[in-house]
Length: 371
Ligand SMILES: *Cc1c(COP(=O)(O)O)cnc(C)c1O
Image (cartoon, rainbow, N blue to C red; front, top):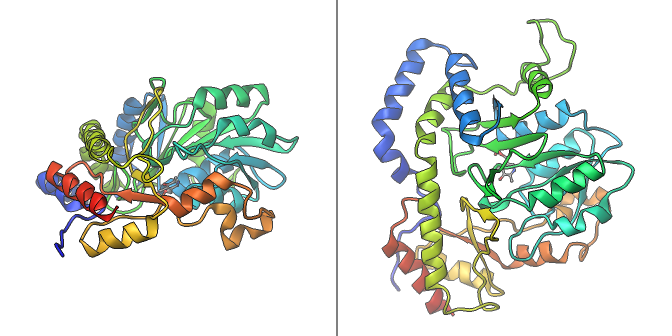
């Protein structure tokens, strides 16, 4: 049996050509001994605001904290219901529970894995305070429908754009639709830091000012607290590294799209339902944080690929209503059939920008061999 070495993600290939530039920036940052917030973080925030097309951006300690701080600033808490997807990373609903709000799940589209906007209205009650759409795997939700509903029912919108920095829906970038847009720079995201970090954007100046205060324990002026915030600050070391990488983000997204097209071509001999390749709707530009296929033989295929040195991952093996910690919400097996089916059939293939065409060929051929 031939054993390849094609990991799901190889960050060393991205680091190599940037190594000197990053090392120099880190050295300068160390020489300045200015580590928390400060001018480098402000510079990075300006660059991000410009890139995303939002007037205000705040560097945050992580994507999770970006969500948490958004909810705190929007006064979402006990007694409030927030509609979101059960097919997402834990943090989305975890943050809702942490502020005392109740996550209300609605199922996803079978082809995009994003919140099915057609199911949202039926889930709205007198307690609904917000919608929290998650732009999963690099593709935006149908935001015009979601924003129309939010307007009609006077709901807040917090976008979880952790996986979709740079993605566009009808030409507008992820994170620009709602009251806040939340991003993560976890190393495996399209723009990855050297550790944990994140960002919030908003078009609302008052909200921006409030979040800025909440980011430093609600302190304003220093040591005077009219609000209870937390430590949600971004490190200058992350800001200087992210700023260097940001210049390449669009090129990387194009390379990811190129890789996705190549997979789509090579895998088209295995038509659905044997294997389903990802669907990007006509209104969307995806940044392909993940390239996820669906197959009923998922577990066997994963094992087969692993034995042959091809890295894959399951995002996500459980829907959130199936998680032990969310049993108190009272959902049952069968409540979200598309999410549940996806957890059993989904598999992420290597898609990172530096992946070579011959490697994609190997992955596709190995999959074809399996079938
Ligand atoms: C990564 C991720 C987060 C959390 O971001 P961290 O920076 O890891 O805290 C939240 N939501 C989604 C959908 C994510 O993928």
